[in-house]
Length: 385
Image 1 (cartoon, rainbow, N blue to C red):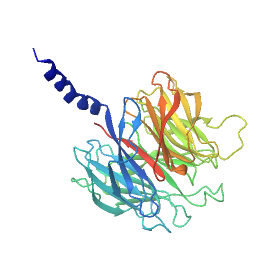
Image 2 (image 1 turned 60 degrees about the vertical axis):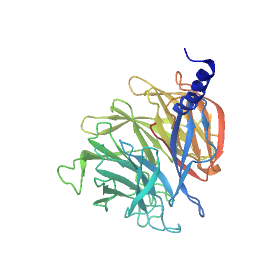
Image 3 (image 1 turned 90 degrees about the vertical axis):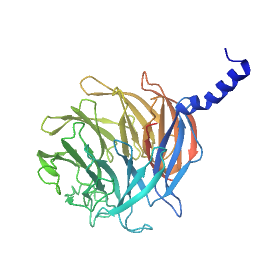
Image 4 (image 1 turned 120 degrees about the horizontal axis):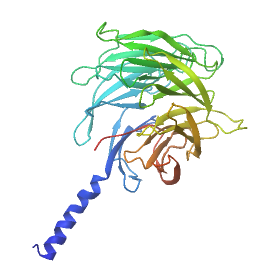
């Protein structure tokens, strides 16, 4: 039997390991101002919901507003949302390596052949990065760029570039295409492109075997038309892949979609994010489902900045459970931590990240646990331990 003093020493030495087991790293992308670094790594305690006030790592990148992790977590891809008037006026995508200690190293950058790239998705096989060039200005307008990924994880020049027609419904925001996101279906057979400027979601077959330089081919039903002036933004699928949910930024709504086996999308209904009688500005934005698929969360970042919580029915339908303040202006993105007990919101307009308690059993959001200062945060991605 160990002497008491040795037993106490052993317990003391193990305690830090126990504490660190509850700590996960997360990456935060942002819009850069002046000499701000842009990309940050923080540590988060999944036991108590505490986010370190200061990043343990930061990297200088211009406007790394959206981040993508490879499946093996060895690579990170960031879109550099640059355009006219920015410090770097060229839209780019950056490839970074991520080692076992989560240390980031910039590998290379390539142009996306468009302005203000705002979103990206990695193909399921890891061979291509699809980038949504939003393009604030009508000329040249938004586009979709396909960038091959080399075996070492670095990005290659654009091999496929697609342009689209605007709807012209809103004379201020829809004079040209504005591609806001691109997502793969869960089975990886189709990719979907949301065009805020055209009120459409375009569907493509992912067929690299047919043409390696042009791996996207129009699906049998090439697009889904959304209500005029609604402005589609971000898309997520349910766990089955039979249903999808799309934020309509300009309408402040979520569209509930059905997905056919041939990739065709059908609009089932739209659900308001705003409360009855609300007459302020609407701005539906980020949308994500819980890991168990039972709940869906979406932000409205107009004049009533909040997170809407929905229950997902067995038929894919949505039932509103709660509207909860986002604790800041212009909530750009949010993420649920690996434990499912906390939701972190990137409040771009107030330069902060808010940590909000979450009940995994009923999906409800509770009290605000912490707020830390981060300049113009735009994306939050948790890393695997």
